[in-house]
Length: 105
Image 1 (cartoon, helix red, strand yellow):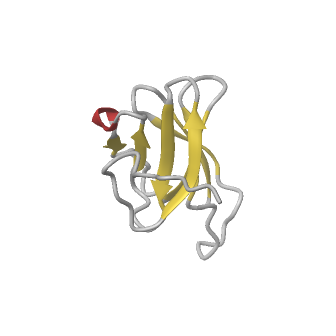
Image 2 (cartoon, one colour):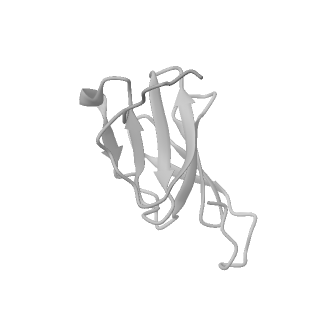
Image 3 (cartoon, helix red, strand yellow):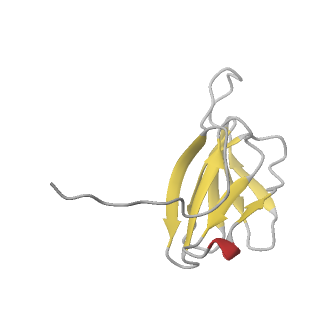
């Protein structure tokens, strides 16, 4: 039997981390805290590069984040989807679900 040792990649903690995604452009692992919902965590293999973006989500609780083809990141949460630009601006793109009890994230 082979044994593998593991250790945390960073010191960041989340109540309920969701939607981990590797951003090859930046070399960062991204994830959202489902219960916090107002920030996106990111880290690289060197913990000195870790951090939390307090994403200005306009009250939309973020449940997932992925790199966007046009730059920045796509967010899913609340009742729809948004684009987070590299300068921190959030543009709501669609809110296809009108029932507030149903969330995308």
